[in-house]
Image (tube, rainbow, N blue to C red; front, side, top):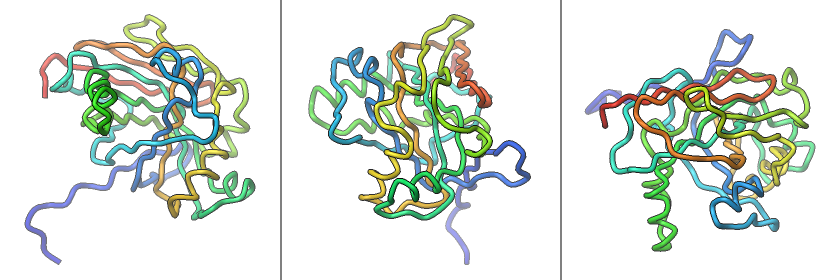
Length: 232
């Protein structure tokens, strides 16, 4: 088959100890999954069910990227997150099926045009200009779920230019990865290639050109992003 232009390369995330990488087809993001972060954003956690937004795979980059400070914002924020990737097909998953479908975990950054997100909130419009931003989904090398072990008291943290900004524990998530898969699979046929970003703890804030961002979770490879001066 011929194309009018070259199709984009498949975006892949490396997996520790694997010679092959993980190809990504969809990115789901969980909103307000930490109580303290919901409060700092002026909202509350919906304890009835998690809720979601998405990011385009075309906007994903790997840890270590050097990117321009994005256009269209004067308030670009960091959000440090645990991401997980699925390795099995599930629909209306049971707890056991959901747990078995999680293939790997990794550190990730959900970079956000906060001013554009606020525009959406104020006008009851979608968040796409705030959240689905070029280079705004940053993924570190992942670790297979069985090697990472059970989610418990692992620390999740982020620093900018060596200054700590975010510091929390994975136990503080309102909805666990297994609960997220159980709920999300009521609405989508999930499967290999689907990655979920699970929300951020409190302490989000603005970054500027020439800032270096490093996010960590105990037991996982760190995620890094450098912002350059030139705007895209």
